[in-house]
Image (cartoon, rainbow, N blue to C red):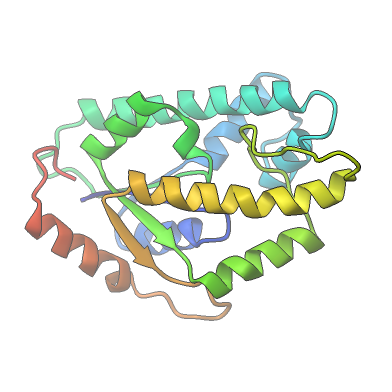
Length: 219
């Protein structure tokens, strides 16, 4: 079984990947690979997620466009690396795989998205309206860098932070639509602190999907 998890930051992709890795899945984590590439390129002293966020900055800051484009280039390279590995690996008796993507995987281009759909079952971890509202509130209280892809548009007379908060809601809505169009399967689940995660919660609906639509690529 080959699974790709997509969704916004905070939707539980890394949590579920960790659970599946304890059940024999090979974990392919995009964030760490991108971080290592940025270190090798001399952009970062280390590849921690916290430092990547600080390095990226915000859309109203100088050099953001260059850094956003560079990050996306590295993300595309990492996805190509993962996909090439899957495409050249015999599917028969192969170990199961889970790809833990970034929230911006939807911007990697049609070719990568198509290859990912061919090689894996793409699962959108969606969240409830209440949880998305909580994410928005958390962002307002503590803004964190993300790839905006031209969704940040400042109005006349608007300060940077107000524009950031307003536009983040638009970004969430656009990404939700894109994730849903891209995924084979949508599973709604709200991350809850202390909640026990059972692999079957994720694997059973995926297995049911595969029974209805078997994949020739061993997903």
